[in-house]
Image (cartoon, rainbow, N blue to C red; front, side, top):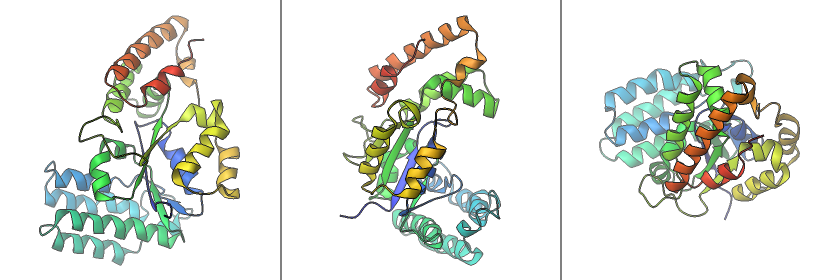
Amino acid sequence: MPPSDHVLVGGSGRSGTTVVGELIGAHSRYTCLPFETRFQTELLRLNHGRITFDEFCADMRGRWMDRFRGNEVDAEAEYARVLPEELLEGAVAVFERTWAEDHLSASRRLVHTLLGAAAAINGTAGWVDSSPVNLLWTAALHDLIPDALFVHVIRDGRDVAASVVRRWGVMDHDAALDWWYKRLLNTNLSADRPDGFVGPGVAHIVRLEALVRDEREATYAALLRFLDVEDEPRIHTFFTEILSAETANIGGWRRTQDAAEQASTTRRYRELLDLLAEAEVECAPALAAAVDDS
């Protein structure tokens, strides 16, 4: 059985989903989309009645389609990954004609047309999307793309919170840490509930600190085994030269807090990890085992 041609990377925002998606995209089998596509999860919101058909189609011709037109990427650097206008419009037009008759088939066709074309233009068999929200819709995305693989990227929540504050500036560190906790509650891959379970062998957890610092070679090899692809010079070069604790800003949260604040943050972080463990969130043990109090 060949490797899957569809990989959905996700997790909480600011956890490293982009760089892990780029790592996978450095393999000759995959094209990593140079933006968060997000339209596939909007499709699921449509099919679950959370937005209207007209709203979805307007967004496809507006903000989501802008990404495939190249309006949100460096046109010179990413020209090979921008889709022709006629293909974009044709795909949406077919979706509009067929959605009412069969929601799932029409949705599936739209995803495969757009993402498959992006891969083909770049000369690869498969594609990788690193929209963090992918992991909020695991079961539904699994129904939409049955052979897709899910990679859940996790990161020390204190670093996630610090990155949220620094990059988004919409909440303080404590609020950002609570936001991270709530996101993980909704990205459980193995809990016995309809919104989380996607089946064995379909999902894989990558802890960012392990990939860039703690257990680099073992974590990298485990990811390749999960994807069922061989190591290659280009992806290995990305792994060895691009990924590092420095570029990932591991432990950066400490630079924004004094000793007393760090102690308070870590106490709260451990409380949240205990709550995640009580909720049987699959990644909780890995996060708890890696807490550094020093």
